[in-house]
Length: 285
Image (cartoon, rainbow, N blue to C red; front, top):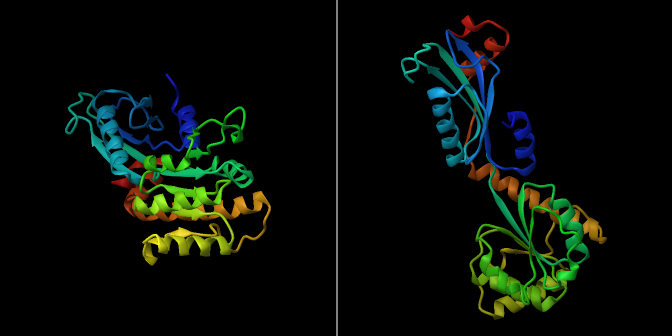
């Protein structure tokens, strides 16, 4: 059996949604003592809080939180005999700590100097990374883990696979290719971040061409160019990459804060936990 602590470290690194279930209070006869933990994902279970109906209901509660995408903590008290039909007859208080993240997908078009600098930063962020370039030799060898690589003859063909809510960064080696990617993103009515690398002159020319192609100003305004936070200057590949990565972080943090529901423990629930940890369970009555 994989211990919950070992699984937790791996899940935190991979950013897979999970719920840590802890027994924080007991009374009478219970399957396991205070401090026992298990870790629940959508498909896996690590460690145990004792099995039986208590564990079954805890798994169901944890997966409901994952299905809802709820972040935060939730305290649940289980009377084992009255509610769960377990003959041991005690009470258990479980703390559910839900770690859910808005699963953000990012598609990086271009594996030039800035793209290669940028991917080093993006690898450390909670993103599903997709890297596209027609030049297979531009990708690093050996290829980095946890990145999906695409090498089509025409990168525009890949745009059909991009989810409408994903972030798209366009920085290929060819301005015409960049333009056609922007055009296709607007044709697909893309809703996520569309970031285009380049100068203000390039951005103005692209806006003019897109307007001539029939797109209205609101649609064209979706394209951020030059992409990146203006407060971060510099023209070196890594400096540009840092600026763009900062904008990506700003984007997904905003989405995470607005899209995912969260729960916080009430004062009485916090008092329950404090009393349990200090060894005064009667203070919670």
